[in-house]
Amino acid sequence: MKQIYEGKAKIVYEGNPGEVLLYYKDDTTAGNGAKRESLPGKGILNNQISTILFDYLASHGVRTHLIEQVDERTCRCTRTQVIPLEVIVRNVAAGSIVRRLGFERGASFSTPIVEFSYKNDALGDPLLNDDHIQALHAASTSELAHIRSEALCINSLLIERFARIGLTLVDFKLEFGRTHDKQILLVDEISGDNCRLWDAHLTSFDKDLFREDSGDLIASYTTLYELLKGSM
Image (tube, rainbow, N blue to C red; front, top):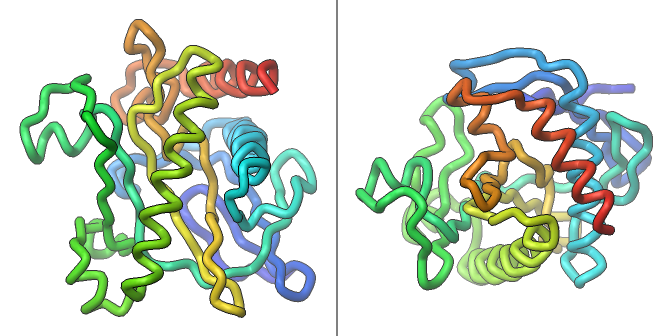
């Protein structure tokens, strides 16, 4: 297979015409790649978790790039041009927004907060406003409105899905891509790598365990997968 791109956690390969194969690695990073480790089995778990969640979103009308899971580490996806934006949706104060704006960690927002960052490792993925996005030609006004609306819809659906297994969706990051005919699809993955999830005791089921050296990430992801699978 011809490799198209290798990121921190996945490798993208050529697939059938108009498609790619997404291969999940065991590599785990934090701090924009400053901290890195290989955790055996992580790629398998993320592929399984993301497939469950993408299938759930698709069943509720969200258009995604996922076509099917091919094997335990690989999924077949529609090929897109990834829009260079990370879309961050926050329901509860945690992480960088606490440091930047002084919110109390764990405080719930009355309405979700949507933020955008520039998907650019060399620049440290800086936060953007709508004017920056226009100046960068990252997305048109109508595309940005659509992305924001989709992100909030996805947020509502995921809040409900995680509540079923006793978890609070604190915040998460999404990515979107354009197809050859300019349709916008949800791409990448949804897993503990890009969601912050807490149980009733504020125990994390996400990559904060790795960032903060506060627990066993593989055990947590295994539990997350088993809970999601058991509640399908």
